[in-house]
Amino acid sequence: MSSSTPPGYDPYAPHPQGGTPAWLGPTPSPGAQPAPGTRALAAPLDRFLARLIDGAVLLVPLVVISLITQAGFLYYVLAAVVLVAYDGGMLLTQQGQTIGKKAMRLRVVSAAHGGRPTDNELWTRAGVYGGPFLVPYVGGLFMLVNVLSQLWDKPLQQCFHDKAAKTVVVKEA
Image 1 (spheres, rainbow, N blue to C red):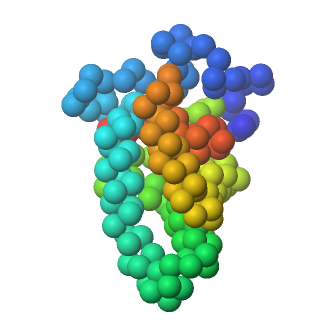
Image 2: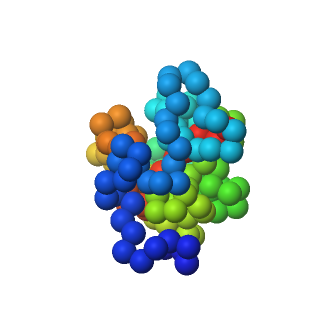
Image 3: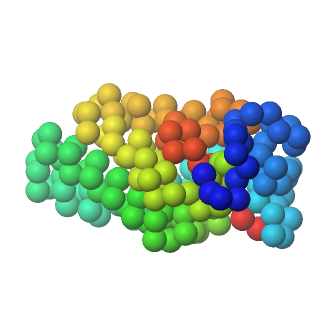
């Protein structure tokens, strides 16, 4: 929590704007952009497209790792390291954005105050997202359920990795 966050503030407690934190603007209607200077939760389709772009960026290193390791257990270890390092490193150095998030104008922010998450929160987010890939097949299934969980999570549309790190993904005007 930052020094500007009131003591005892709970980002998951009910808030005046339909259960969302006060720093978060109203969600625009589908297809509409948020008002300039405001933030709204990112739409699931925007998040999916951002992950698709990031997947394209990661395709080359993952194919190289697959060719070197012959897709054995070492592949899963190295692939998980690449996923966590890419996600965590980009979020830390690019103001809460990966290449895909930049393209889609999305940003990872703290659920508590809407500002930059701490380094630990960003690494936690990256670890919970990419770490399960260490476990062949089951890890991939967990990752799928993880990214789909935003569809039923209300009101903040968080995936499991967002919940673990206390972050949300917003669309910027």
